[in-house]
Length: 359
Ligand SMILES: Cc1ncc(COP(=O)(O)O)c(C=O)c1O
Image 1 (tube, rainbow, N blue to C red):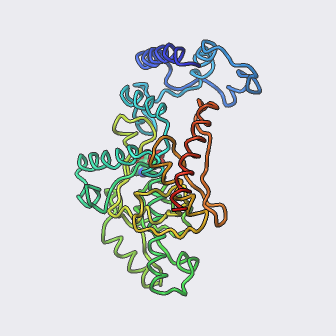
Image 2: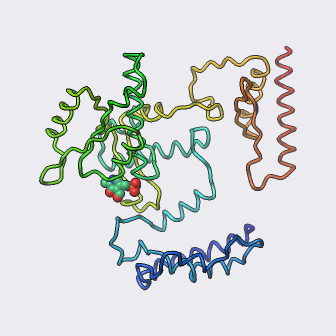
Image 3: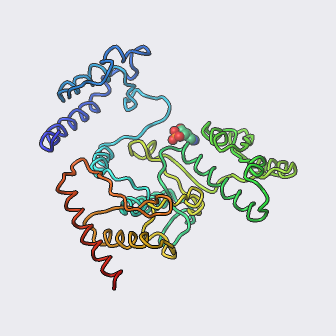
């Protein structure tokens, strides 16, 4: 599909989506199909030749829509609301076009910065305590997860890592396994099943605290369980130091957007830190002294020049004890001329690095 067809098909798709949502009330909310209905309706293997776009769109109405449960039908009262809105759909289109992966600040600065600021906005709207906000110098802050289940698991694993590190700092002879055997997490007996699952995945005991007549967990019941467990030599480690809810359920944002806040964001980032070299960047840890020698030093210097010039962008990796500049051909639209340009640029900068080295 080239750009001019994309413009045409995009407008047709917007019309299709608007018609779908305008007419959704007329569709049966729950599909009238049996398990396995789809397989006989489509070829057994992917087509060898591309199909016409019209044929694909026709298949959506003929084959897919009959098996769709229409979560946005006004007759849908099941599970929970899943949010969707026209602005969010347009935003999804833009995200698809930018198509960046924001795993670090340097991987796409606007990604991280927008997430941090929007999570502060949302936190303020919810009147979360100041400690949960990043602000300009705060220790807290929010991060977007895919689902609440993921957020619970992340929180539990972070808390687990924190307590293990604390106890090992006090008593270095303690093994991780010996500590984990004694860890206990606590939740209300009304908590979602994903909390129990987080305990299973995290390999720790999870105690359900009995709720009161109004299904609320009482501090006194938690206190009692804590005292019992401590007396039995167990180590309570996980209550609530974080908060999460799903804008993709409540706030017109399409799946997936699960907003999670913590009072100390280094508890989260520190727990899962591995530090592969391709994720390092100059703004990350200014105190970092990297002891690369010989050709490693030259490669580092070359990489620094390449990324400062900003004509192309590369990241390094380690190959055993060597630091290597990775040249990955990434974009779908890369042509030989782009690679040639990059190569000439790298050669020129490498020449500069060697000249400086000689001097
Ligand atoms: C209270 C509560 N916790 C956790 C979840 C799990 O959420 P998710 O589907 O985002 O993992 C739900 C889902 O409805 C929920 O209502």
